[in-house]
Image (tube, rainbow, N blue to C red):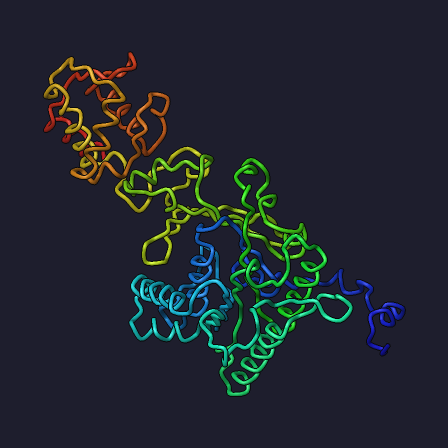
Length: 438
C-alpha cells in the first residue's frame, strides 16, 4: 500500500470538505441540463423508439464545426464541440454511415452549410461497427466490454481496454499536433444489452461496469451515452414512474449521472394540434424525450416532443405546441395566426357546404368535424387549428370550436343550443369585418 492509497490519505484528513464553503465551480454539461460533460448517461426506451437515431442526431450536432454548426440541441445550449466515437454491435457499418449522411445533409440544409460541411461533419464521427469487421480486424469472440476475470471478479475486457487505449492515443496526438478541437469528447454505446457482457439484472456486474465507465470518462474528459432498453412488460408499467421501466438492475438508474427515457407519444400527450399541421401523422412519428432521473445540479427536467422525419433528423415540436403535454391547446407559432381573414374565409366556405349556406341551416358538430378534416387538403389554412369542435373548447385557442365561438359572437351563426345554425354567411361582408378587426 502506497502513501497515495485512499485509506492512508483518509487518516491524514485529505478528504475533509475544507473547500466547500468557497467552492462555486458550476456543473459542467455537454448539453445544458440534459447530459453532463463527463460520466455515463443512460438513454433507454422500447425497441424502435428512435434511441440510436436520436443519439446520432446529437453526435452530428456536436461534431459540426464552423459557422453552420448549430449552437443548441433540443433547445439546450451545447457546451462541447469535437469528435464522437460510436460503438455498436447491433448495426452494420454501412447502415450507420447512411444514417449519419442523411442527418448531416439535412443539418447543413437547415443551417446554411454546404456538402463540404456535411463531409467535414461526417469525418468527425468515428464508427466502430464490430459486426462489419473481418476476423483479421476483430479477433475477439464478441464485442462485450466487461468479463469475469481471475477469482470471478468483473473487469474490463480486451475490447474495452482497446477502446480506452484508442481514445487516449487519439486525444493525446491531436493535442500535441495543435488541434485540440479534434479531441473525441463523447462515446455512444449501442447498446448495453449487446455489449455489456453480462445479464443486465446482475447488480454486481452493473456496479463495476458503470463505476469503471464513470471514472474512465472523468479521466478522459468525455461523456458516455449508453443506450438501454425497457423490459418486454414495460407497457404494464405505463402508469409508474419512468425509471421503473428501465431494464435491468436498479444500479442502471442509480449509478449514472443522468437517465433519459425515449418513448413514443401516448395517451397522456395531446396531439390534436400536431395532427392539424401533420394530417398524415403516424403512430411512431412523435417521440417523447424526458429526464427520468438526474443527480446533477441544474438538471433540465422538461419533457421534449420530437417529430421523427424520414431523413433521420427530428423537428422539436415543443416550442410550437406547448399544449402537447396536457396544457390548453395552442396554435403552432410557426403557422398562420388564428383569426386571419384567410382562416375565416376557409371556415365560412366549410359551413356554406351545408345546405348551400342558407340561413337556418342546422349543422351537427360531428358532421362539421368530418367535413373539416376532409377539407384540409383544399384549404391548408385549416391545418393551423385542430378539429376540436366541442362547445367546451370554445375558449381554447387553436381549435375549430374557438373559431365557431368567434363567428357566434359576430352573429354569423348561432351555437346557443349545441348545434350550429347558420344566420348569415354573406362572405364579402364577413371577410371585410375580419380584415377590419385585425
